[in-house]
Image 1 (cartoon, rainbow, N blue to C red):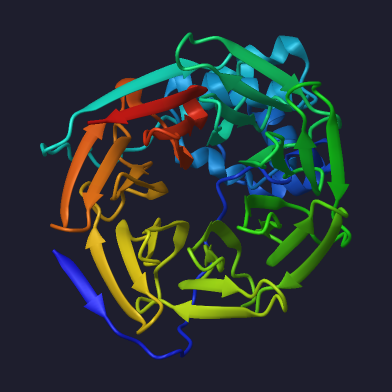
Image 2 (image 1 turned 180 degrees about the horizontal axis):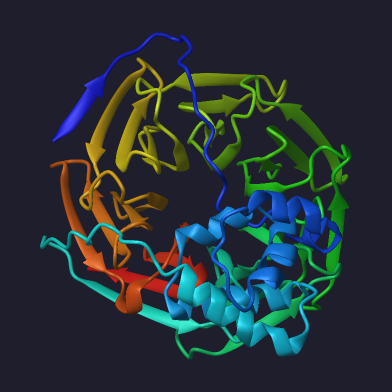
Length: 423
């Protein structure tokens, strides 16, 4: 069942949600033990507690551990921390792993709602070569390859889906934290350096990396990026609450601040008229930015609790978004402000995330369902069809579409790349 709303451009009260990324992970190496202990007055006693409290809390809010993981999930998280050279002696890692696995098991999640429909799906997964890479964003390039950002391995990688052969490229600066990913017309691969405050360009032919540092020290976490139809690179800077544009011809970067404080610009898409749209994950808003003036126009969503995380645009220039916090798929027509919502099949806690337009339908992943799902929504008949991801999936954060119209994702917590062939 859908919900339809029309609205005027007025404000709603907003809430800010904790990010799930590891944007400031390198700060861990410099943060104080005192600060970490202050965050964890009631962690369970036992071997490993002191190390966890003294070290892990320096990177991020240590209470994230309370969300819990499966034993396999904790092993992956620990490999991520080891990749980032968290200063824990080798002999202590098994103790830390046992402490976390014992005291913070995975919490219950909504059971995935798997439903039949007119399409068949073949889902293929390839484990990436470097353990604990945390594959974040995927990219389907024109040559048929599938790329991914190894956010915690400091690598970009690609797999040939025909052969399963991988190649990984180590980046120029240590702990760059590659996040978003996009291809230019010459076949170069551009990425956001989430930890090092930069935009990067990789030449796959030579492996050479060019870096474009942020001109403003406040712009610490470049996030998602895309090219508009004129070849200008646009990107979000989530925690800094900014949008940016980079001219590849000159390397010039311009930044502008979102008009809503703490709105956390997140996913992006460009429409047929070359207008760049983005969603504000810290607010109940979709927005656009003018290509010349960089003026931002916001479109408040009718529910104050809405937190759109990713965005896709159909050929008719209708905006579609995944409402992560409420478990909805949303549709916005910017011409009249009409918003229509559909509850995602696995319910309010299904956490819909990465989304793309695939062969006229919306395809996205539910990252909160157990197991994670691939969801297809046909806008013509407003029908859903869902499939469980083999092995559980575990968080497809962003998605892309191959030249022949197949859905691509990267599974962060199972360290894999996914291809979904829909027929």
